[in-house]
Length: 193
Image 1 (cartoon, rainbow, N blue to C red):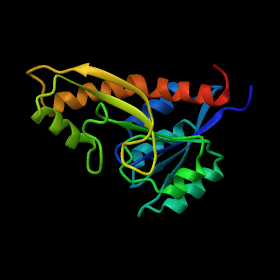
Image 2 (cartoon, helix red, strand yellow):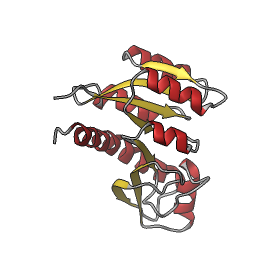
Image 3 (tube, rainbow, N blue to C red):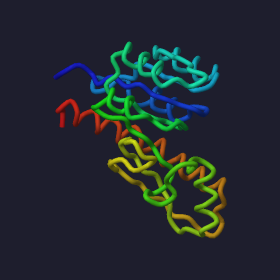
Image 4 (cartoon, one colour):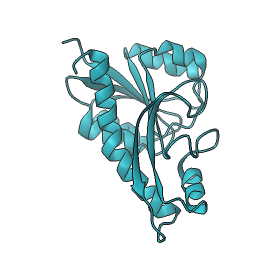
């Protein structure tokens, strides 16, 4: 078997999904998280990553070229976006041809596109009285939320759900399914499946 697939994670928020990935799922033979990059100062994420032996970098203000350099220095094969709120440019996409994965908090193509992230999505789902919502894990291309869909997972909503409870249901789906989809993706890349 080849070496592990090396993963770099990009975050813009508190990093709960990145912590979940680092702590529970992706320190194994198939895939290894090498570096976590944040677009803002985040001592909690830094301390957490470093406690697991994962390198940490902050790039603020955001500079895509600098991020590419950090990822390449760590020999990253696959980039994982986990609450990353910047558009990825074509040079960045071309630099990581094995894949850049994103997690979107709706069942695309619903509630995708520029400005549709986090609470903005949950508010729209609530306002439109949706009966189901979920997450989409997809590859990144030059357009917001339009890359190839790798997996979708749904949850039911009821009359008592509001944007906060919707967010909680989505977070549960994210923590349960993002790691397994990333691992499956890495296994396919490695030819282990």
